[in-house]
Length: 329
Image (tube, rainbow, N blue to C red; front, side):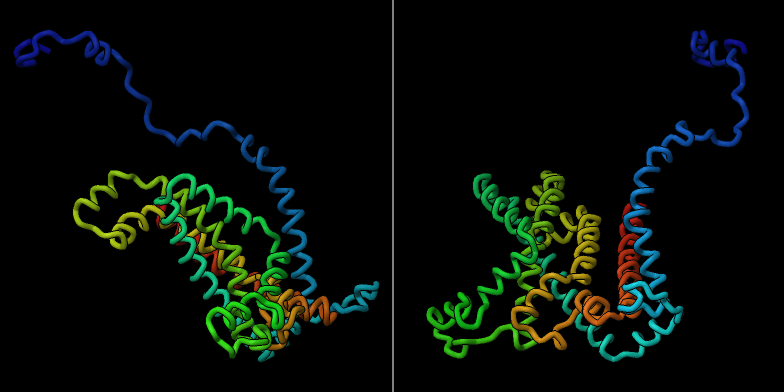
């Protein structure tokens, strides 16, 4: 190459000479396998085995039982009889099952909506509270979250007690609502689920609030300040800035709340023992218990449990796909 050919660069640099003398790169071949080989699978092996034993094997046994005539006689050693899809046919043709299913879906949806709404409001309030008040609120929510579900149900059951409940006392003596004197909250199905919903939401809000508060601390302050300077109000800042940042967290928390509220058992079962009417207040979790454990129809109870598991998996897969799409974008 001549000086004229190179124009204004008469002297090639040392690095350019090295590049000219460097050998041609090898033709592109198949991508090299990432280092590690079987090591990641070996590390995951123990966890997979434990999950398979704890979760997989009982699930397989549940599916097998749902295809069998399995009652109290089989519990004491009698061989089960294979009936295949007869249990599923009995369940899916039973109108009581559909009443319980609709009741469970409506009740769970209401609990999820109220829990997410209150949890979001509490998380937003925690951002603005001074540190001492935020610590006090956090301790109170931790105590509520840590309280066992049965203990919380018993305490709330006392508060709504017919004769000695503090709720009836406050309504009658403080607000003059005489119709609530000796009022039974658990006899009527609507007020029964109101009490159950309060207990469930009260125990679930702390988890949602803490999770969303952790996400709110990661939202850039300069973006919020810029939006505020541009005249965006609190609702608009939440809708256009905060919610898009926290949308994956909202989706994950919503999945967990849907799963937990659809399979709720302790609160409903304990309130029924206190004074509720079982036939009018059963949800799927309690209905499965009554059919299988109390009624001795383990095969039919297993079929209901499998149907419930399929329902939960369908909802979870849908929300997980939504989260995956968000991450791809």
